[in-house]
Image (cartoon, rainbow, N blue to C red; front, top):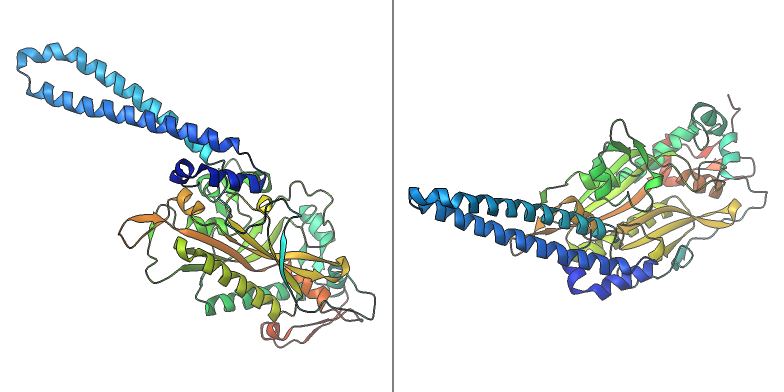
Length: 423
């Protein structure tokens, strides 16, 4: 959650952030009032407990004949301490419940507004042009016998699919290229759990407005993750990490699951919006003062990856109302999809400042020796959806697809994906 001191000392800053997100400003006042109640209840409890301790010493030092007379006072004081303790606990829980409803404070420069109020920072690369009728990624994929949506639906239902043959190899190639680039940038590879406990999912901020996107197994009290960000954030929960040598960087390779609630009728064709996919996620722990620089580095690595695959793309600064609960700023990188005549998101990177670190109890020692919450950042370096832009961008008239040079070593030197008879 946000820093309680910020809520107390700079309520107008928090309200401006809420306004930019289109969220409740009244919630800030409610949380501040709850904070005042919490602090007053805690002060009362601590005062009574100190009085109880002092009285205990008085009883211990009293002559034997006087102790019996003091028993009633001891019992009365103990009851008062117990009542005050319960009141303090309830007040703390009430404050925490309100404070956790306040999303991260957006950074200066983030565009206000909703989903359509983003700012385009740059467009990179020439949009592909064809002298033949362009096929969409599913038609191309079916021609390569690489994507099978019909059998995916037969086995698992709508929005599931099989990647077969060159389709499976292509995804592994993209992911492996991304992993090699992450390794070169100093990331530690991780294959994390894809089932996490509620406190980890809650701590990362994924059980807020978009909780209906998450698959939950009630019998096991576990959530299926929609990104390895969740498990990688939980990796160091309730720990003090060492950032003296610089950021801690992880690259998590995992299968991801999303319910896609509320997307009925959207992107039902092909593998743009599906329930299960693979992803290589960059995740970073760093000091708050280094977070914005690290954010720029994550974005640079993402852009470099798209450039290596020969994709035309744009970078947008996401508007405050379209940020997730944890993000203080998010850049989306959207690739041009020719048959849709539009840019579609392939990857994003978020600076979560200390929001997740505070909720998950992840700290580092500052120069003073005191521990402080760490900043966390995330960014996708490859995912199944990249196949969409790659197939459409590099398609040929005969249904074949040119393989970008950067991917060829991961496909045994293959330069062209050729159509084959489906089986």
